Length: 401
Image 1 (spheres, helix red, strand yellow):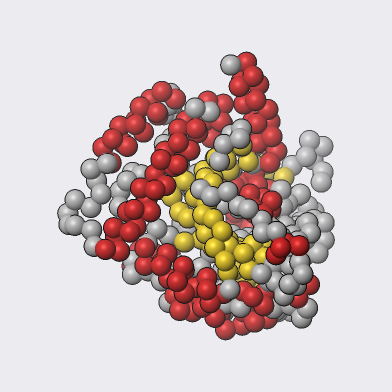
Image 2 (cartoon, rainbow, N blue to C red):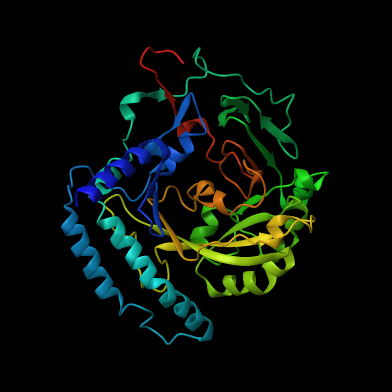
């Protein structure tokens, strides 16, 4: 017991700095996206209250760990009878339910692992306010602490690369608004028709980690109000092979739990891209008290999403990485409290061990709405969460940066 407690304290210490809590040798990690994102900045912090706009209960409602565990157990027992009672499952829905049943125990065990981590649960309840005493108001464009601005007349935004190659973040004025660009980052804002501009002139300048979060087509009117979607066939034209580094790339694709989509990816999209499937990771979504955001067995709106991983082989056929394929353990689970609608947690650090080629990896995110240090971001709104309203100034003890 003493060793377990010491290990928990050690993991908390690492978590404070990294934003990632690892549960020993298990297949489970917990992520605080705010801490992970803040590693891309030196003069600003992502605002915890702005990031965690949902799934937080009032601080006046104190919850005991045993009560959380008991409540979750009751929900699981009750949810076994929730799966589409209103009508029988059709053949596609049966396949989707079978996928769920195959991974259900993995997700239950992962959630139980979280509920047993008392120190982490205590920290989770304060993540929305964590570090607020070290933060100072909103970004002040007239402050001497502001960093260099990007002249929009010199750097046209659409269909052009905009880079911050410096060791500090850059404050840019675009569309008469302030945006914070992470250090050593780059973005290209364009529509799908201009994605060819991402293709490097030489294969050894390609990317060996490619994360993709497509705006999958969806008939939900509510979702369409949140962000624009595209017909799935549009994604077939993404030139993954041309974007791949000559030694290959790890491709990580976010998908929903809709069986129609999974079938499309497996039978059409990955084959068209030349991506060989390798493993599936799961993002399990919880509230600040550790409970799931929804019933695990409810057929629609399940509290997890899938990240499909595969390899795109480069043109270097003599690469040792092609002769010795990297093994990715299946059914890894990462847990976090969700941010804004459809905003994904930064998972690059969880993938680096499986990326072919030399480190640091050349990283690309497609359909990005957020930027990271060391990454190239592409999409029609890569600055969505770079708006200065999502940041607060970081204050050092002596009041200077």
